[in-house]
Length: 184
View: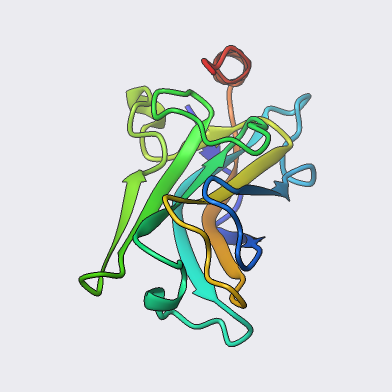
């Protein structure tokens, strides 16, 4: 069972999809957890929630009508293993949280979804947070079905609420094994 060593705090990372990026462009950024994760003491990060924010252009506008050149979507994921510039499947054990923004320019409609909240699939004792024992988290975001708008770079930010926890050696080892044995 995890014991909290700190109260909740926030970590953020922003990636930028360049203006006029081709369909299928995926970019990656990382959050360094080296100051929080400590193997010998069983210290880990408990991710309590993740919010994704999409903004466009130099004004950081939330106007989704200007994000893509035609109908399409944006996808974003936070993982604790490095997927490179790829999005992972929902059954991948390293997936912490994911979401999407569907953009229907033709009908002036957008839909923002949060697909997976932290550790919905975890064991009962740890089910309220996703335990990270790796020293990095990775944010990937991309555009799909359409080019990004010309002249407007898109910023996708992951805002992560977390806390430092101490795990028993058994729980730490189980999470480390699960993390490194993740399906691709």
